[in-house]
Structures are given as C-alpha cells and as structure tokens.
Amino acid sequence: MDKKRMTYFAIGFGILLLVVVILLARSSYREPAGIVLPEELAGTELPEINHPENHLNVVEISPETVKPAINTLSRPLSYSRTQTVETFWSGGSGQSVYQISVSGNKTRLDTRLADGSARHMLVAGEKAWVWYDDETEWTVLHSGAFGADSAARMLTYETVRDLPAEQIAAADYRMKDELYCIYVETAEDEAGYADRYWVSVSTGLLAAAERLCEGKLVYRFSASALDADLPSENRFLLPDGSMPGTK
Image (tube, rainbow, N blue to C red; front, side, top):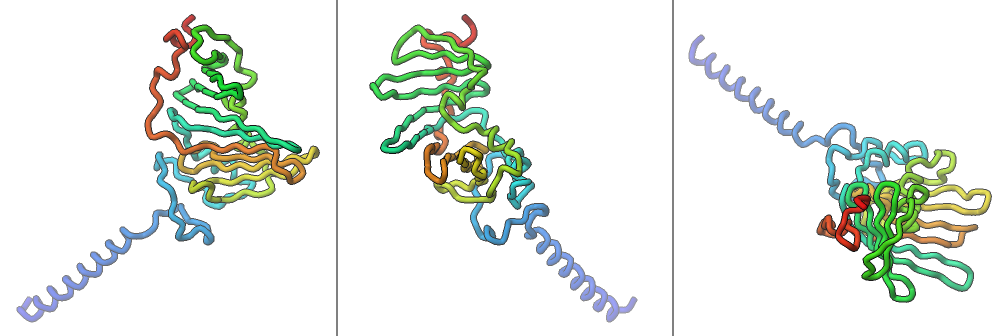
C-alpha cells in the first residue's frame, strides 16, 4: 500500500472512530428504559427514593394499578414521626397528637391527654403494654384486635393497598405538603362515607388521609416528616427497663 493510500486509510479510520465515540456518548445520556413519566408530570423533580431497587415500575396510576404500585414501595424498618388525628362534628372538633416510634415489629405511641397527663403504649406482636406519666406499673392488653395503627386512630396502610378497584373513584400522583404521593380516593359507600389517602413515594408511609360524610370532612390524619435520628432501642423498653414479653 503506497503512502497516499495509507493517508486516506488513516483519515477514514479516524472518522469512523469519531462516529463510534459520539454514538457511545449519546447512548450514555439516554433515559433508563422502563420509566416514563406521565406528560403532566414531565419536568417535575422527583423526590429521592431511599431504596433505588424499589422504584415504581407502574408509572401510570389508575384504580387497577394502585395495589401493584404501592406494593413496590418499602416502608422504613425504624423511624419516628408525629401523627395528628382531627375529628369534626356538628358544632365542634377534637384533636389527638401521637409521637410514634417504630423499630421492626415494635411500635411506641406517646399521647398527651386533655387533662395534661401522658399515655404511653408499647405494641409488640399481639400484645400492648399501657402506662401513664412516670408510672412503673402497666396494663397488658391483647392487641391482635386493633394493632398499632388502630391505637393511633390511623386509617391503615393495608386498607389503601387492598382496596378493590371498583371502590376507587380516583387515583393519581399528587403533591401533599411537599411530598410526592400516590393519591387514592374512594367512592361514597351506602352510608355516604368516602376516604382520601396520600401515600408517600419516598417513604412508603401513609402521609395523610381524610374521611368525608356526604361531602363534609369528619376525620383528618396528618403526619410530620420523619425525624432525622432513628429511635433508640431504649424507647422500646418498659418503665422498669425490661424488654416487653420477658415478664
């Protein structure tokens, strides 16, 4: 091969190499396959997910996809937050505030009562231990009938997940108190009640809920952001320092 042909060959090979590099660079900036935001949410900044492997596979939320979408979320095994429950009736309203601490299957609920006293409840397995203020004695209840969510007067997470599609009147993504949530609204039942739920995409926890009776608000649940620090295991001890279930 003469010198002229060698020059043409080198130029041609260089151009080919440059094209390959450009194509590889472009492919590295493509959006990951399988995740396509609905048009109305394109450009919306998504919150950080704690578990990347559990990103939603079902992006379009509808009554039929509520359950599989919620099933992709993971709730933290350990956290603390404040939950507020408000009830409304003709001529009045009431409010209860609960400090919630969770570690595995143990949940502690601390509530300030109307008379100023504090009620403490520790739920673990199918039992609940209840004491007041700084008491060192407690009452043991069998909690299988209500559980920690019911003790905090909270519409249960499982209720949202297991709603039959025909009972869901609306389902989509919505912002709630700066949280990106799966929103689910039920149709009115025969008694005139309808529920609204907001499930946080970033934590998998119920962030807010409302119950309406014939269009009027009768119940509202709200939760604060998770505390920055995880609860100490000392939070889940009985007043005498023992572990629940050891006595």
